Amino acid sequence: MKTTLLALALSVAALPALAADPLTEQIAATDLAAFDAFNHCKDPAQLARHATFFAPDVEFYHDNGGVTWNRDAMLANTAKYVCGNFRRELVAGSLKVFPVKDFGAIAQGTHRFCQFASGKCEGMADFTVIWQLKDGQWQMTRVMSYGHRSVAQN
Image (cartoon, rainbow, N blue to C red; front, side, top):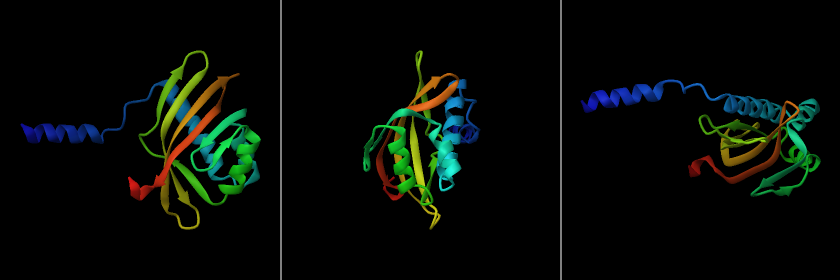
């Protein structure tokens, strides 16, 4: 009996996740698009595309880098410290999305960072993003990236 239950538990764990709710699907797709542009931001057109996912008055809180109070400052930091240096990946299964009535959503998850030069994915952090749906477009209004650590610490 224990063997049968274990086999059932293992087979259920191997099944693909049930379809996410529409809000989670929207946020996941928008996150993917925003960070596809981020990951290719060495190209100025991709950096400009990345900018469209942020409200002009976005607040970005980074435990190691400090706070930026608007999109222009945040993008200047992205251009200086990120573009051409590393890419961001969402850790599979980590994204959780919560609706915010008459505004948008809160997304939480974990992301890892992979260096272009070495190909190694050695850094990771947790994140929380406040998304606003305005005029049919999702934009990040508040972003927190925190708990930066090496993958080896997990």
